[in-house]
Length: 385
Image (cartoon, rainbow, N blue to C red; front, top):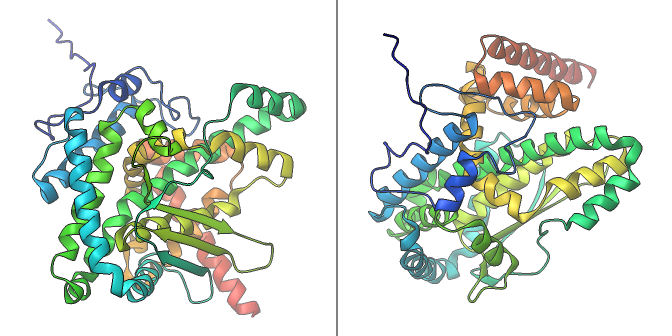
């Protein structure tokens, strides 16, 4: 008799014993009701273990979060522990802020140097303006989910361009997941300067690890409704951990304005800023479509899901990189490859991303071919200079 393998109806917690996501989050993943569920760049995968690609990346992201929380705090990710986790996070943040207070300028410079080195950013390529600010009250400038009436207004105004707008929104949404995924994965790079941090205070690396792990875990422990209240600043004691803004004028050096409550959070915001600079190269030429795509794709409720699922998407994306991108002296080429991908028209971009995330056999040779184009372009550019 042929054996039928049952496809699980739940996320896979086998590698995160004792941990579990908030039930509403789990239901949206299982029912494919997240902001990324219908994204044109996400593959439609179904196998013996997972019923969708989304469920697979959610399980992978959750496993990473649970392992980090266990490593730094000894705790498991459980929704009922959200209150105690919040208090522990506040205590750790207060210790960090107290230690950092007389070293902020030094740490700000170190954060910029670290991100520039690891992301292959050359001197004068981006104007970084950064600040470690401690914990501040959430402002009201964050973009909330767009009301339905406003969405209808945009659709009516751009009726003749709706198909183009939809494609650009899909592309922008996926790029956002890569931006936040890279920031979450990279926020632990403070370990690369552990020795310098320990000279300030031996406790700093562990305190950074604990706070970042607790913040990450919080996104999986609170419902979307609670997350929306926290993001809006309406809840008691809601504080802003960090903020990034990119200012880019044509033919001028882009400016990344980044602030963070702590050194580790500032690193997260800086990576976000650099990735946002890359994304500018992939914006549509039509200013109306560009504005509509940003309005429809960028909001706090969607960002919460990018922070949950983005890290696993970013991991899958980088796993298909040509090997030379991991060589120390060629790391700077990564940004040019990402920009080359972002410059693709939406349909082409979506198909390419599907191939990469599915790990199709053609994906790696195609990326190698794009990287060769990048190297040739750079060579020709320098020859002309």
